[in-house]
Image (cartoon, rainbow, N blue to C red; front, side, top):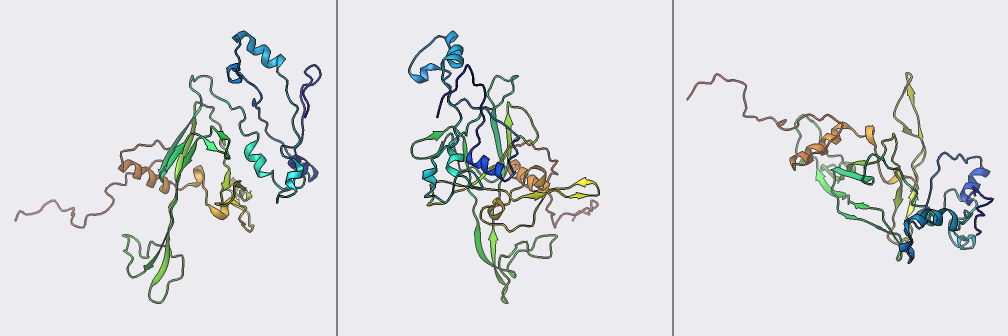
Length: 314
């Protein structure tokens, strides 16, 4: 670990073990870059000292020593006793990915005085609680908002003879998990789902401006396991690009799709979105969505209603 010589050094690029592993296999394709200011103190009061405003710029640019980039963020010796190795690991070490370089500088729209913020609305599902910080371990916390929700799955034993029929359907609406027994009983699974609308306000509107990462938390594991999405292949039919399909691979516990079905934007059926909008509307909650939902009120027919208006008084 050495310091930059500001009279000679301008920029230095250092590949991590994971980067060198990708480079050796011909898979290193850098596309993006980020900036960090973790080593800069803008207000010296947080360092236990004071200074005038005119001295801040010179202190940061000329008087603050800067460290060269580190090759490793965790000692190779400590990896010997773990299941993840440094040089030939297929993915970055989980502890490094979770605890280092996690707060890059963001962007904001200069036309707003307020800082960028999140607008999250649940169309289906409920928010259990909200935390302003995340607890990384027993000592460190980060100001990353946490929105917690719980999905419940109910398993029950039903009988096809007791299923209430639904108007317009000739089969049971329940989807049995098990095969139907001779006496008509089967095991049914009632699952819940979440549909939420997530927008970044006071920022720049960009296509594919949000990224999603999925981690698996085990009860007895201190470090969460980062899951990967199954590779998708693009399908072109009659010259038109169709929705991406998951390639024919065996889904293991390392893939998100093994645990969850996640749909984004246009992948979500309009009927499911309208179901959530109607649920919120019944609670006097209005949500602005880009889907035109028909008014579902009054769709159940009244068996006593008639179109005959010329009725003789009795």
